[in-house]
Image 1: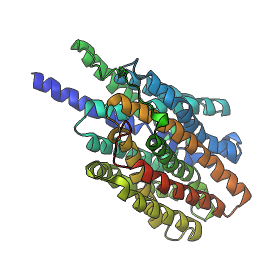
Image 2: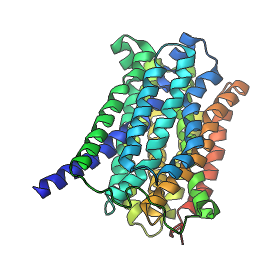
Image 3: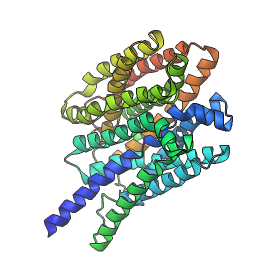
Length: 400
């Protein structure tokens, strides 16, 4: 009987990781393919349109450290419950059909995703201490698969529901609701068993606090996280508009984004497993940087030619850079608490950096309508990614 209960608990833990992960990118990546529809419907300018992606990133930047600070007061499952509830509220508000709810909803969405982003690495380290690489891969693949579907199917979902962009964005309330229900089930089983929450589960602070902001490696991980996110969110926001200017139709642009994100899946699963076993993860950084720069220059110089090859290269490089940055939170720290603190720092600093990307990419297009300056800006960021990636991947613990 105890074995059955243990198996059920393990399955619920896995479902929590998968379902929460499914909600951490799709609400944002679903925006890009229907951004022109939103802009036309609500008469927004390009800067306002880009804010639909930037607002959640600003929320990540502002609240990630604060979330990690509160992590020792609230159990991780309860924290995830609040994350999904906040996200669900934001998803509903965002599609009410006018400008103010659109931006207010984006704020709630950003806060909900922020909590999930910060807490999930600690949840994985706590619930799966011997399978960190595998479960990080599961987390990454679930997040990127739904993100890919959100991009590829966004326009089609709007047409299918008959509600246009509101249907495209509103459909994701379903996944958030399912995640919320599974977390409630986990909490119910814990309460029913009168299980005493483990000391590590409530993240009690050790007497020796972790001076992350004094660690060069912690800063390098944070900046590496930020730059790879800047590249992803800048391109996921603006590539549909770029492709339309290149003469590609609206529906096809969503499928190009789908190819980018579906290409992430193999490396986001296999990458953390391989990287976790490597003695020196710095060997992966040149591979990531070279592939990423090649893909960006292909978009800039070859335009609509070989666009799917460029999309695949971008997906592989960005998928590996993302999963590696998440792995650093757990593999470069010694406890669940330290992992959450590192996650909070990296995502606060990282998403502050990332939030600059979509607006800068769009602003450079206002100055240079060819999009080349926007792409060169991304190339410059990738050079920085290489430098900080080498520092982040050093084979040691942050606490050492």
